[in-house]
Amino acid sequence: MLSVGGEYLEWISTASRINGYGEQDEDLVEDAKKLIKSGERDAVMAHFALHKLRILPQDLWGMDPHHRAFIYGSIEQWVKDNPPPKENNVENLLP
Image (cartoon, rainbow, N blue to C red; front, side, top):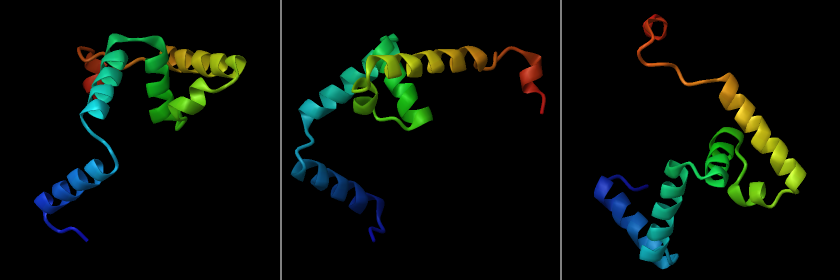
């Protein structure tokens, strides 16, 4: 068991280097974040599917187009039915 924070970070760094995770991969991660933040539809849908539905992006994108369309439609309907709370709405501040 790694007991010291620095020891853990060193271990992660070493494991990343051994497994070939480097600057190119970091660039890909940043590109993915930019796609999600920009609202690119496939990226946003994959992000939602990953976190809410536990569907991996490669599984989503590898689906038959009809199945993927159903998932996309389902996500869009869920978002429509569950809007984020409005921060300035007094009702949202009540317990």
